[in-house]
Length: 278
Picture 1 (cartoon, rainbow, N blue to C red):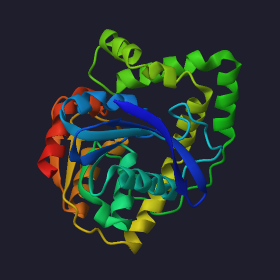
Picture 2 (cartoon, helix red, strand yellow):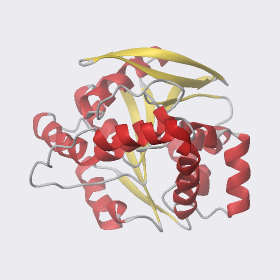
Picture 3 (cartoon, one colour):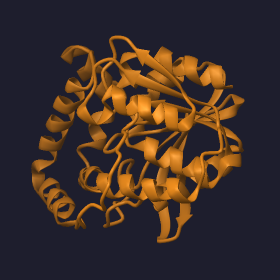
Picture 4 (cartoon, rainbow, N blue to C red):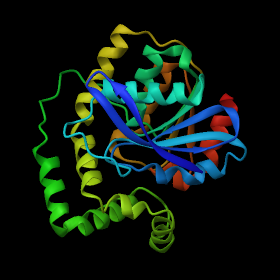
């Protein structure tokens, strides 16, 4: 798998992301990670798509690139993903996990010809009725400063615990995976911890901005499959995902035995959905 740092242009300026590509036959599949997640979690899915052109990416700060110093916006994430899609060759199939569902849906509403199919992997779903309060960058800057002062190990520990709570994997199996694929290295980087914090802080604003995109841009009918984990978190409750599936005219599939990190628990279910849309 080849990887390199590429620059995409957004309304707020250039953004650096680490792009990973496994070369193969198209149409390309672009894997989009949820908030505070590294693309390293997608490897089991890539292995379930042999011979296919598959790409994943780490957003600014998460893959050895600098945190931009502000909370990421929905518009930035859409513009970044558009740049990557055009680099891979349109149209692509998107597979978006958790909060990245906001980015994927907005991208399709604004640029429908760039995408031929969408797989939402235990997507985050919010139906907000009022704009969220304004969030600053203070917490993210504090986290970065603390990590730079020698507390980066705490970030690795917290990430490991959080990951264990979101997958059915045993602790031993997960530790080996994180070590082999160097996932822990990401969360030992102060820039990564700052961006992870910033992404979580940006969640409500991005959900609100998606509601505005929905008002302005109708859904173009891109074929969509919603994969709902059988055991997940509150923001991924099944009733919300059913409502989202109706909104998008999507097929809803419940994935037995899976928790929120479906890429680890049921990569074959994601790969099957990608193939079905291809």
